[in-house]
Structures are given as C-alpha cells and as structure tokens.
Amino acid sequence: MPITLNPSNSDTRKFKVAAIQAEPVWLDLQGGVAKTIRLINEAAANGAKIIGFPEVLFQPGLYDTHHVAGYPWTPWANDFISCQSVLKEYQENALPLHSPEMDRICEAVRAADTNVVLGFAERDGGSIYIARLPLLPMGRLRITVARSKYPPPAMCPGEYVHTYFLADPLREDYIGDGSAQSIHNVVQTEYGRLGSLNCWEQIQPWLKTHFYSQYPQIFVGGWWPAFPPLTGGSPYIVSGEASSRMTQLVAMEGGCFGLVCCHVVSKEGAEKMKLTGFPWFVFPGGGFTTIYGPDGAQLAKSVDPGVETTVYSTISLDKIAEVKVVADTMGN
Image 1: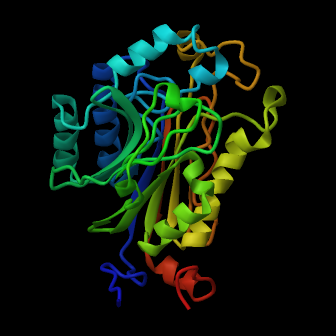
Image 2: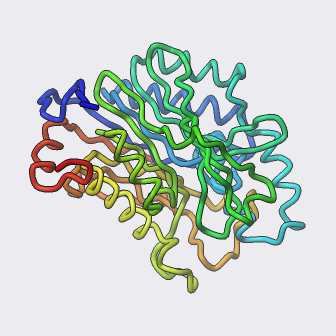
C-alpha cells in the first residue's frame, strides 16, 4: 500500500527539538508532576516543538529515570529483601494513565502547544510498567502506550507509547508484562511522524524492523542513567557511551532524527534509592543526553553527565531525504 508522508522527508521547514536530562523527584509523584510540567514549559518557551523525556521519568525512582519515577537501578544494586521498602514506595508513587496527575500534564502540553514523549512508571491495577506516552497539543491522550521487553537481567517494567512489551526476569518481581499493541509506537504530529523506544529496545532487531516500517521521522530514545565504560568492572554494554551508540544506530538504520534522553543521579538521590556503594555507579552522574541526525551525526555538544540540562537542536526533515538517497532500510 502506498505511503504518503505529510510532512514529507523533503520538507525544508526548520523547527527545534529538545532532549531533557534531569533527575527524578525520587518517590514523590506530586513533585514529579510539578517538575515535569516546569520542564515542558521551559523547553516550549525556548521554542521546542518536540520534547523528549528520559525512560521512566515519571516514577518513584527505582531505576532512576526522570521525575515521575526513576529507572529501577535499585534492584540491581541490592537484594530483593533489602529494597522492599523502596519498591513499595515506588509503586505507591507510580502514575496511573487515567488520573488527575496525567490530566495536569496533558493540560500543560496543550497550553504550551508542543509535542511531548513522556517516560513514566505506570500503575495499572496491581501492576507497574515502564511506559512511554506521546502527548500531542490537542490535549488528549494518544493511547499508544509502550511497555517493552528488556533483554538485561534487571527488574524493569514493560513500556508504553501506550506500548507494552515483556518485563525481564528480574524485573518481573515487580514489573508487569506488556501487550501486543505496544509495538505500534509511532504517531503523527504536525512536525512529522514521532516514535519512541526505551533502553535496550534499541538493540532488538525484530522490534526495530517493525518500528522502521512505521516510517518514524523523529524518535525519542529513552534511557536509564548510565556511567563511563567499564566503571567498577561493569560490562561496556551498560555504559552511557554504549547506550548513546544504540540510539545513534537506530537513527542511521531508520533514517530519522534521534533524541537521547536520560537521567542523572545526585549523591542525595543515590542515597535515598540505596545505590551508594554499588561499583558500577559514579555520583553525581548518569547523563549522556544528545541529539543525532538521520546520518548518525551528533547535532548537539556532549553535556556534563552530572548536571540537569536540556539539549536543543534545530532540524528540518529534508535531511532525511538526503540520507535515504544513500541508505534506506525500508526502501528500495
């Protein structure tokens, strides 16, 4: 079936995108909502039309994602018994999809007239998911929540755009599996087709092939906080450098702009989340936010890994056509 992209990959209109690097408000849903709204307003005031948040931004903070939650590194760094109290608070502070808190965020997106990909820890019944949700300025939820499967042996929820996949073995202790609808993770916006992938979804070949078949033009790569290569004997694959390269590869394979959005962790946050002393981590740190073009070129300077900041780039979709003349994964 013929596909007509609108705007097309030859559109020369320039617009600004923003990749957010920030620390969650640990185990504090209301504080996380307020911080998320503030960051949306700040990026929109700086002209951003597409705003990407880190993985599990909205959560109690298990991992350490962004604001409304945090990526669940806690279970990696402790035994299950030691982190039970944190896991309980994590669930209590997870964000339900249909809730007054989500309504506040939707209203902020509408008022700011921008497009947001929100990463959050979602509470659905008795389950928790690592979720992604695109919020468009018409002020309604675009229910494409993604709950994803993670290859690493860590506890982590599924994910959303609404998109859900399966949780990994360790994460299944507190994070639920997703559903098949999760693989539909690209939506149409005024500025192009906007997609999202979290964490190691970005190295899952069959998932990525389906993602590319939806013709994303811009995508948000949501990430955990990750640290310098081989820190404390850690495998290279869990480093910030490796994670960033995974998003860069998706940008090149998919011929799309890639926003690397990740968390940072302060010394205080690490102590609260029981991360202090784990050899893989260095605090403050965890950030590696940047933006890649469809040819894999880095469009934004590297930032301090321990500082909260927002990275911007002015882009135009015609760069995609320039690249796809040379390499087009889904074309001829």
